[in-house]
Image (cartoon, rainbow, N blue to C red; front, side, top):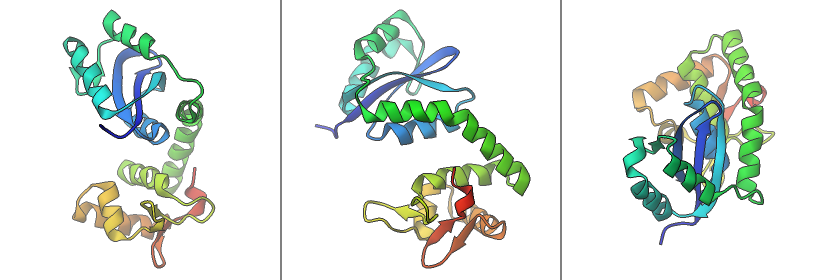
Length: 193
């Protein structure tokens, strides 16, 4: 039996395809999804489940699959959303909604930071992603459950960009004052969104 988490249903605010996925951390998942989606995402439903639950739903709705975990908003898919329902009492859904409400403000702040500091889209994306691993109030990047300082290998695996690209990004972010090293990597605290 798989790890307990949530099966979620998300869609762009103007409609369109519905993503059906599984996560154990809805807050982090919605942040990652939103960064790659051109409009605000809305959590339609969130229900307790496992990876196996998600796979069963995917099989049931196979004929409406567009690509990967994205499905056409067909009546059968919408019925499955209604059956799942939103569990208002879960912290995941509250945190996700909080993120969605503030996403536009954060995106605007990210664009301002990017323009003011001459960051490339790639550098900005890496900073935003690394900020998910930040320790509040210190800027220290932490990795894993033991909260150890993030080292080069950790950044390499988190960014998943390959050694050459990661080296270039780290060097550039250090030069621009956003990333520094002192027995572990830190992000400049004024970047923290």
